Image (cartoon, rainbow, N blue to C red; front, side):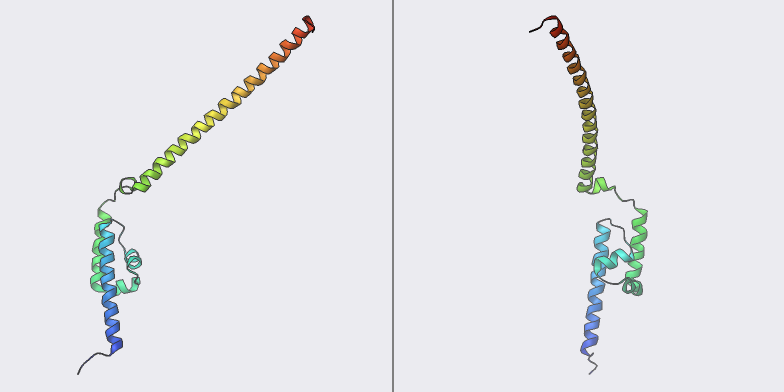
Length: 135
């Protein structure tokens, strides 16, 4: 007799599904040691922050988890993420490579100058030789 209209049943089902998604997202963020906040949970769950603020249980869970995650230091990106650590290694190697290139450029410049001097001396000696021993 007191059957709910279909649109109310659908709204209740949607609300329950949104609550479940928010709870799962909160657990996933906490397990991944990601920063927990209303915006992060809302984005991960695909719900609005207003929905989270208006839901007393979810709000309390998010606030507790946010306080807990702030007190627990996050591991550094290099420890946590192999891509970040390999990126740091790549940056280090790129910097060393650039230093090596700079050193080689300086060396080539010095060698070119020395070659110019040697060619000038060689030309001068040939001219002197020409004066004493004509062909």
